[in-house]
Structure formats: C-alpha cells, structure tokens
Image (cartoon, rainbow, N blue to C red):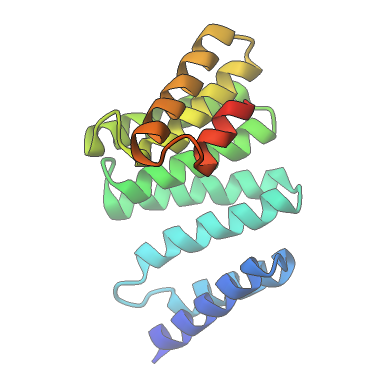
Length: 178
C-alpha cells in the first residue's frame, strides 16, 4: 500500500540521517511525505518528517529552510496532537534550538518556554523529559546576557540529571561545560 511504501521511505530516510547524509535524507523524507500524504494515520508521521527535515537543514546551515520546516512541525503537531503533548513539546524544542543557532533569541525563548510549560504540565518540573527545555532556556538566557537566569536553568538541568543519572551522565557533563 502507499502507506507501507511511505513507511519504508521514512525508515530509509532515518538511516541516511544516522549516516549524516543530510541532503540524501531530505530527499528520502520528502519521498516518504509524498507517499504518506492523504493516507489514514499518516499525519503523526508528518510531524516527525518535518522535524527531521528541519534537523537536516540545520546541519547543512540552511537556517531559512530549517526554520520553515521547524514551524511546519510545530503547526502540524498542534493540529494532530494538541497543545499538551510530548510530540508538540519536541517540535517546540527543536524549533527553539534552531532559532538559538540562527541567533533569533527572543523567538527561541518563546518556543523553549512553550516546550517547558507543556513538559512540566505533563511530567512535573523534575522529570528528565524537561531537561532539553531547561538547557534550551539556559542557552537562550546566556545569549541574551541574562547570566542569573542562565545559571538557574543550568542548575535545574544538573539537579534533574543528578537525581536520575548521577553526575557522570552526558546531560550532567553538558550542563557542567555550560
């Protein structure tokens, strides 16, 4: 079926992404999207595809397209999953990260705050899934010159890491470095 062909193309795209073949992965994700378009149950996969394409363009340093696909991912996630869903928060976090790298810090802050609000409501403030939001907020506040807030969010990241993985985890090391 078209859905099955779309899922095969999606799996191929994910493999290309793992091999850091970003341009080829974008082509494969577009093929998967085209094959899945209009198929029952395909919209959640569209959110993933848009997020992954934004990731590829980000690493290719094409921030205009990375932001365009990141925004598509957020809009589709809101439509498919609603506001308070983990996938919606992931879309906001990814878009926020790209915005930080592209130096759109005010908009990045808005997206990371939305993701943090969603994840905190879903899991609580000390859950490991909130870490990316805390780290994203810390990075934005650092870029905006607000060292006090930046340190506060880096410390929150460390606190959750210590509670869940100990001080030798990758997340704790990133927070130490920052």
